[in-house]
Image (tube, rainbow, N blue to C red; front, side, top):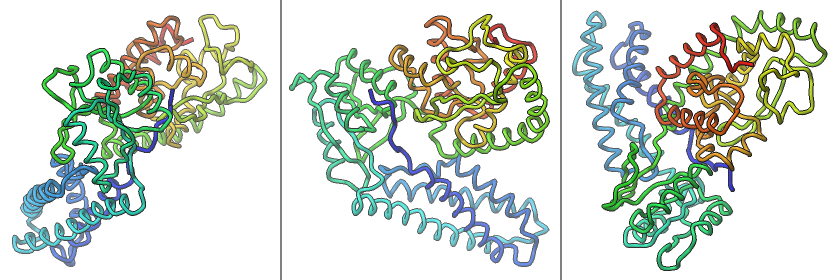
Length: 451
């Protein structure tokens, strides 16, 4: 079973696009609208407004299959909204004496330059894919009919979109078992699976869904008249071919990623500076007084895209050889007296804010498991691997919903996975705030399974 996920995104393109566009609108604003006036208010107001308008108009939601006409429509919509916004600014700060004609000239020139940049990136990426074969995704298609044939032609005849089609499986005619398809997908490092609903039975579709979830593969459907699962499916077009995406993850959006990462950096920095700076020496003294061994406990765990990282905690047990294999249980003799207190209050988890600052973890997300446990649950628990679509967290929705601590039965881990998937599919910054607040309340009250 392939547990590793290949590169899926050109992760820096959208942040760079934001940055360059902000530079353009701010640098042109000073000579066109402000001249010798203080630009700080204008820069702050326009920059925040631009970002909010971009989110509303989905200005940066341009993908490899997006058609140029749609990009032009995005530019036109954003330019109109931005023009109105600048007019609103001039009315709000009338003392700056910004007049309509310079505003129109400023907006036109801004969007002329932004359009050049946007289309340049779009076509340069296409040229890069054709000439150098980079920035591509490997695909397979399950099922053979007119629609899948058209999609395969799209992949093969338009390399500028960055798809490397590896194989089309005619499930019905060739009577190919799905296990053979899954083996090919795993061995060849396939990243995206396109599935024809009309060519597969309901049970086969369910098997494909489970395989994609458990192996971190992107699964998309080529729809027909049949009903599919009652999920919030994302509807897209590749050329004129309709495609459905099974799972929409808010944190795949680059703005949401930047928002969450920014929050993580600020929150972890505050905890490190104002809490860990003085608490660490105190905890270190208490740990050293009671037992020999290091102050910090380091353990390998699986994080985003199944990548292993070192997770840090204050040591709460006497040093032992089975710490990386056996989770703490009720009445565990390995736990020290200091350890019982810091585990009960969750103080032992605080060093993980360094993991957050370094980028291995997030403040909120699915809790990471020991590597040995992850391998076991990946084979045993359905959809367990879905948790690795996002960074692991110090706390999570499952933990605040009663699924913290020791996994005593399969029911515990199944419930944890269910809440983790709900969090992944319904993430918002407000939900993170709510989980952090509930975690703090639980730490003050003390939790039954915090041992």
